[in-house]
Image 1: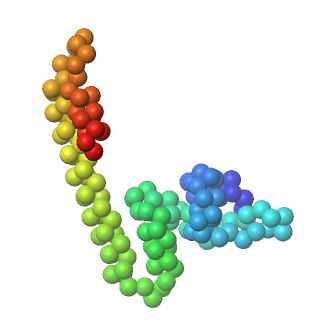
Image 2: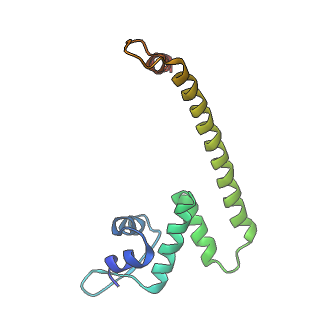
Image 3: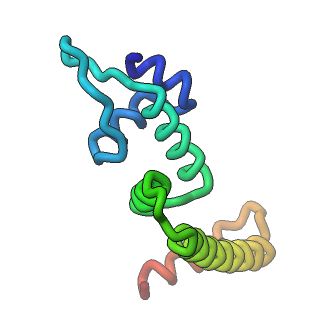
Length: 132
């Protein structure tokens, strides 16, 4: 099937599918006319990638997960470690976002939001830019 049909069946945009091919995550065969010809196995791999990316796994993690998925002699420990490391990264990102949220809430509370030009939000951003 062509890239449009593969996109419909996998739920991924055609541009993403082409990108995954460019970086070697999938390798559809080429028809005699040079067009990509996606198999049902390719669709399965694309769906796998869509789900993994939806869970926030990086491209490199997806590459490793796909290799482990294909390896029937894999150790589930290897897959578990990738997932655990990803959860650790998510937890760190959540902490960063909570810190940003707290800082912004403090700044919003300090800002009068009236007609005056002074603004603690802009002052804080400018201060961080000058020293950071």
